[in-house]
Image (cartoon, rainbow, N blue to C red; front, top):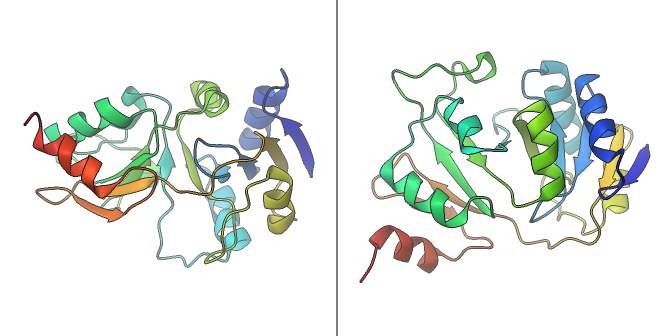
Length: 207
């Protein structure tokens, strides 16, 4: 298992090569370390489930590099989503979307009722996704365990399923806040780095 600093000039090239070769890699995000694969690579996605011992019924969240990436997923992007994304993307906000009845979606999302998406505020990840596109990324830990704050520990816990670890230093262990956008009004399903009150205030608009 190779470990490269996120600041290494070869890190982005190595990560994109590992992903395109079907690998599963550990990457830094703006919250916790993540376990990443290309979403269209079914074998790599399955290795994430095996590495984490994650139940098959739990779909993997998606990280995107731009709003254009998000719209290309075919999601139903409401005015509420526009408000929240303008406030916290890039950042620690995950939104669970349903799908538009008219927009096309990638093959790997066909048959799904929803997808959880966010744009992370992490320079390395944003650079990587400019090269490879959106990624499926879930916390770099065994299912039900806490996520290690260090890249080396995250990689060692998930070995031998990980081909590359990108070290972004010690990271926060607070996850993103998850908001279900399929309800009206949207509902906070997991309070993380952004409080419920902050979400409610943003959606309520100016006093």
